Image 1 (cartoon, rainbow, N blue to C red):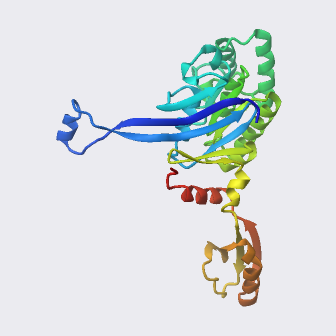
Image 2: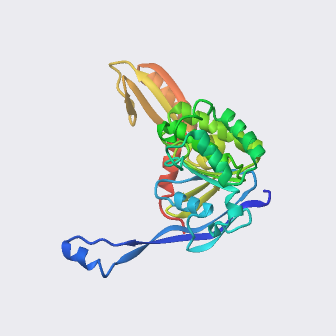
Image 3: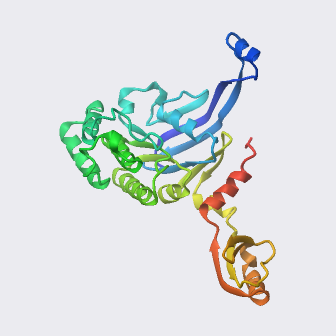
Length: 327
């Protein structure tokens, strides 16, 4: 790996949250005697990301991904451990450092004044980040082309759809050419076409600029297409750091056998009904030939297909298996 653009060591994050008791007396008492409890969001996280790497940060809801992303972006200060991004502690919020990183959240992809046009917003962003006029023009021309923003430039931000806001938000984040890009659920709420377009753009941008990218997403298509490496977090603990194919290989040994049966045929034992005479069986890879042979011999099969389990199904199984917190 090249010199680390991101260096996370033994990171922990503990929140204190109020304990709310039922009843009027408890509510009144809490006004002067507030009780709290500790919640551990992150515990012992450690990894390095080289310059130009694209890494997926994955895990179920509540795993700690967003807390980790905010720490690396400098929004939160960790309880323990250390983080260095491009050689600096991100939570110091040094202006020179902020010009070299960007955070894009799918839940809020575009900030700024909603009454401004997209072009006004982009130009203002360039001024805030001190981009030279000539460089700003070149950057804008490239982003408008790559993100197909030509028809949006004169529209007000408030009038944009979610997919349009995502494209404009990416342009806002990239107009000053950050060296590190943090993406938190960049395709959330997008339709299939918009999600594909967003992934295509991000892949081209990273390839052309050599930017480092950290991505969180519940859509595994985002991670599989953009990130050769993943870090899996569950219950605040890091349980895996490596390639996605190697991770899924541990649970991807089964195959899905789908059959369409005649109306009077008896469904095979253990089959999951899909409707319209279709059934699905999960079968160990080495048992597929025997299982298919028995089905064809014993049952009136009209059609049969064999496929690997979808990635989302495999990830659900991985999250279930890693649900007991790593120690």
